[in-house]
Length: 144
Image 1 (cartoon, rainbow, N blue to C red):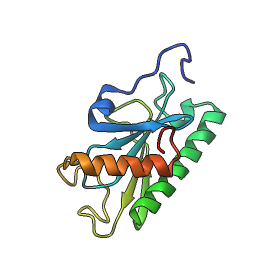
Image 2: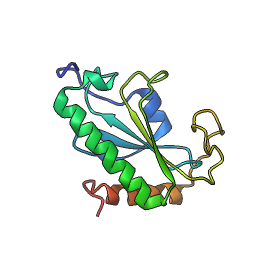
Image 3: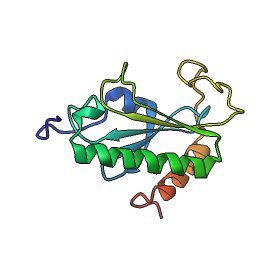
């Protein structure tokens, strides 16, 4: 279980590698700064949590709901062929779940995205548009 008294903050590597979109009831919604793939990370805002089973049952259920909502939003936004979901944490031990829209035309298809391509930075406009579409699809506060 998590230490509810400890303050929560995103792991420094996640903070460096992502753009924050907003908060779902449990998770911070982040976009990986790699324009090669529509790639979102959900980070439950619970201190000291490194595994899904570290969450209490209500938070586990909420996380599954948020993964499902995010996957559906990405599918709607991108019209992708497949949604990949993974919680690895080998480099960043803080629990975070990758939700990635995959297209048969992406450069890594059908292999996993990790280590296949050098990350490509988003241009400011494209990142802002993607973040706005995602925020609206997830009905995040302030998404308008």
